[in-house]
Image (cartoon, rainbow, N blue to C red; front, side, top):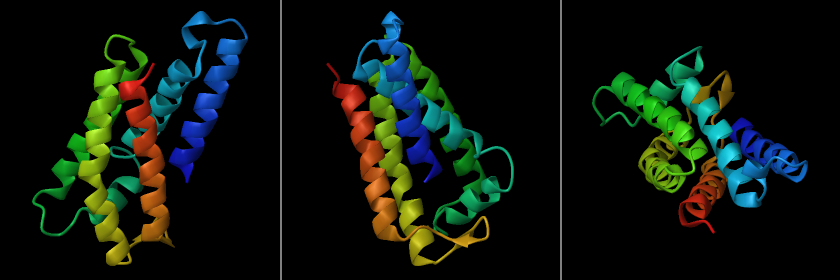
Length: 148
């Protein structure tokens, strides 16, 4: 739920800053880029620090090799994509790449739900809720990729 809060709150705050007169954030499209960037910085960071890294490694489907490397690579891609979202010249490409990354990582969510993993001491979010959240994140990245 934290990524959704980051996306919504980051977008809303960026939009308010735009309405306050900061031209670079004047509009929903640039505000959404900021909200997505905040979300991907947050999710990307947990690929490297704290106990959540081990949770992410556990989510990788068992048939995939080198789960630690996969978690590291996806974390780097999320952070790079977040930076790309903040640069107008690369924002569309970054958003498209992040949309593909969300699709590529979704099997880990399915695997975790099917295996009923416990993450951070709690059962994983049920697959239906995880799917709905992924669709929201995917819609946001596609909205930036195709933008105004």
